[in-house]
Length: 133
Image (cartoon, rainbow, N blue to C red; front, side, top):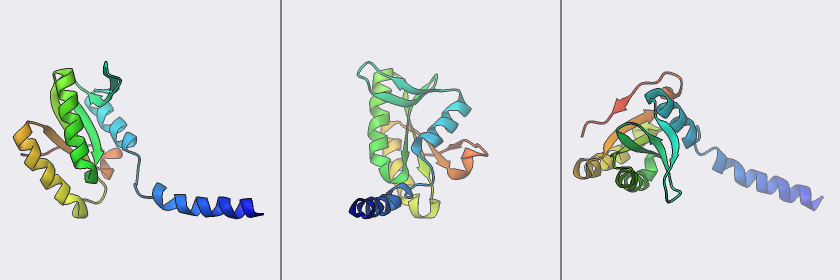
């Protein structure tokens, strides 16, 4: 009986973590990349993976609060592929996450990163949202 209680307790602890996001990052990545004709999960010679490789860009996807990780990875993938670095910032709560867009713009302007925003609604009604730097 103790095992059942332990299992239920662990399940309850895991629920908030899985409910944190509306969708997985890969869900957004798959939709966006397929709509622009890119190659998903393009593997580099060092076994890292570009989320979406297009004819012109090496693009990283990240949720808004991971903006700095996204910036770093997009710059690295751009160097490795000799393509323009790109970052798609996923906003699931645009009002609360605007500060991350502003941070992205500041860095992207200086480092030459092309940026887009993706909203949950783009999963079923896709629109390209380039960010003006």
